[in-house]
Amino acid sequence: MSRVAVLVADDHPVYREGIVRAVKERPELELLAEVATGREALMAIAELRPQVAVLDMKLPDLDGSQVLRAINRKELPTKVVFVSAYIDSEIVYAAIGGGARAYLSKDATRQQICDAVAAVARGGTVFASEVQTGLAREIQMRSADTDVVLTSREREIIALTAQGLLAPEIGRRLYLSPATIKTHLQRLYGKLGVSDRAAAVAEAMRRGLLE
Image 1 (cartoon, rainbow, N blue to C red):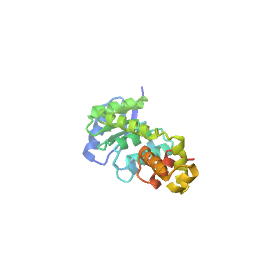
Image 2: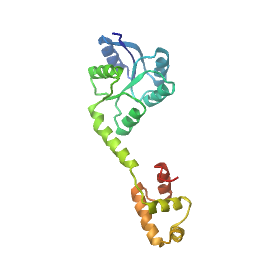
Image 3: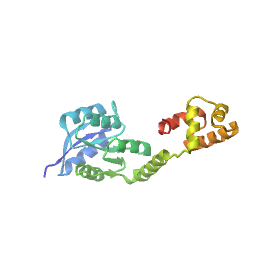
Image 4: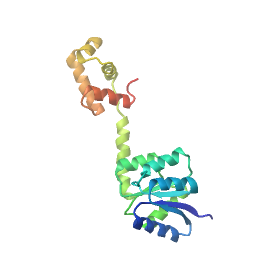
């Protein structure tokens, strides 16, 4: 069986050498290159076409997410495993959304990193236990974020607000009192998570609630 070709990118020499040594000790893995910057990583990936790239998220020149986007843009076959000290749920969510196949913290053992590389090469995905809870919460929050349901009256009001009309003008259009319009607006602000008219219109547009 052919070995998995691997590239390692990390600007901390001691940490990078630890991963490199572990890769070299695994008979099913083959180290193609080790680099210290994002730009070097991208150049080596484009030239050598490793099956898996082990990237730190915070690389000099180009960070890990920029390298990942470039891999996607150039349609390179390399799969990405992130090993990073940054395990914030938003960063992890963005990395996975961008196509990363694994995300581990720098507390991971060298064996865990190599196991993740092998699993990703086989088509699997690996997420460290440290990031799973935060990732699940991020997914739930983003799912809830899109599930805003407006009544037909609220849709009318936000549409007229987007046209620049104030509460008294909207009230005259809809045969409602300004106080009633303001009550509807406050409910709209609550649903959209905003506190003023301009933000409400912008948020409604972002969510696709305005045509």
